[in-house]
Length: 370
Image (tube, rainbow, N blue to C red):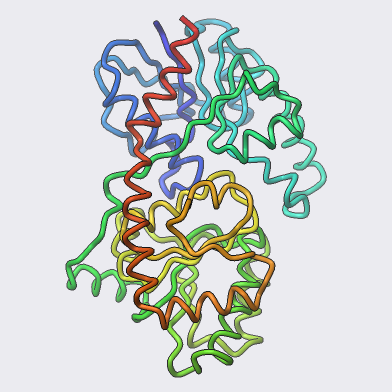
């Protein structure tokens, strides 16, 4: 069996969401399957590759524009594999009859203002078309599966829910010197709450900042309040989020260290008082599991896929209720027993999510094309 994979997202070095999914899943498939033949299609040679088996060949087919629909389509017409797997949303216009696509979320419906009208139309058309044209669809959560059925008209029998994994690098870091080095690198002092992700309104950061201010003012006092560290790439309306910090006179307590390298994340997570992720909408919410795997207590939302992923191992709060969010932050500071319980449950919860399992379930879907 010849399996083709759209590996174009391996070219991204500062990986987030779909890039990390593609990288870690391909790496796990390489460890799992040394029998079937794989071709990884890339738009140029990726600077960093996972360890690939001898049965995996890299096919560099550079194209400056319209790579998926133009260059990858031509490749599918000339040299089609038995099955094509696209790990992130968009099938090429020309594709084998047996094509599988992973749909991560329908965020453009939840937050239409985050995109121009033209981009919303593009996302709606490409997502709907890919979901309907694919032989099978992989959804990364039951929440995404429900959205595909409701908004794209995909029949349930066509969808397989396959959860993400957590890489082995995410585990508790106990070395004090390592932690001190990382905190110094990003200008962070302990204790601190930590958020990691793209800085944009969908992540509910304005409300988090306002809840943090309320927590400092009404529950703990400014001198007793931990820092709030908001780490990640700038996104849509980042400047508005940073401006709100200045308006609330929190510039000494709220830090924006920017994108954190993957190698530094475990130490930064391990040293945090708690990981706070009050997002309004997530297709999966991988940072929640990564924090749990590092033994960090987690506070997250009652919306979308987040309760499904967190289970009973996180403190769940209505993300639209600023007062409840402030009270939860204060509780995490003052209740050591709660932190210990969340830490214990989180480690157990994260252990159930492994890339080997994700790869095996994904391969099972691909093998159904035989």
